[in-house]
Image 1 (cartoon, rainbow, N blue to C red):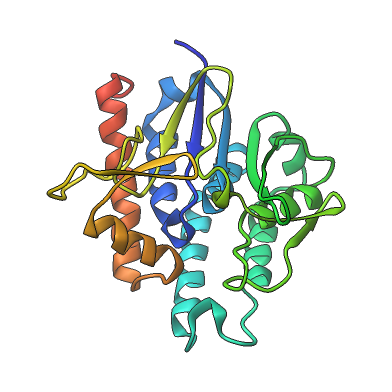
Image 2 (tube, rainbow, N blue to C red; image 1 turned 180 degrees about the horizontal axis):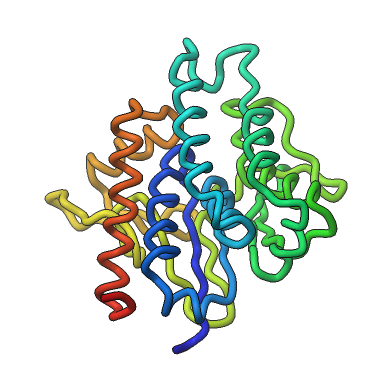
Length: 253
C-alpha cells in the first residue's frame, strides 16, 4: 500500500463526528493504520488528530469530555460567548486530561496542525513540538475563533494565531495519499452523503462542501452544539461513514 495520511476538517463541536470516524479506523482499519504516516487537522480536527497520534486509548474519554463540554456551552445564555464563560480554559483542561507526558515526542513529524496568523491571515502548518506545553499551545491556537472563544489570539512562538480553519480547514500533506474526513457532505473521502436537490459546491478554506440545508444546519451546530442525543447520533454517523469508506477501499471485512 502507498503511504497514507489522515486529515480531519475544522468543524467545532462536530468534532464528535471525527471521534466516531477515528473509532472505526482504530477498531477496524488495521490495513490503513499499518500504512499511516501522519495525521493532520485544523481546529477540532487537529484535536482529534492529536488524540489518534498520541493517545488512541483515550478515545472514549474524549467522547465523554466532548459531550460534557457541549452541554456546558448549551447551558450558557449566549453559548460560548456568554460573559464569564472561559471556552479556552475548558479546552485546555480537556487536553491536560488526555495528552500523555511525552505527547510532544509522539506528535513531532506525525501530527500536522493548521494555524492562521492573526494579522496576515496566512496559514502555517506546525509539525514539530519542543514540549508538551508547546503542543498544547499549537492546538489551542488552531481552535481559537475570535470573539466566540475570547478576545485575545493565542500566543505561540512569540506570535499570535487563530483558528486554522480560517486559512486551511483540511490540510493535505505533500507525501502520500491524504484521506480527508469531514462532517460536512462534500467531496471528502469520509463524510455524510449529500441528500440535497442541488449539486452546487462551495470551497471553504480548501474544503469542498455541497450547498444544502443539511450543511447549513451542520455549520450552525459547529458553534452551537445540538442536544446530547444529536451529538451521540453524529458520533455514530462518523463511525458508520468511516466503516463505509474502509469497506469501499477493501480495508476491512
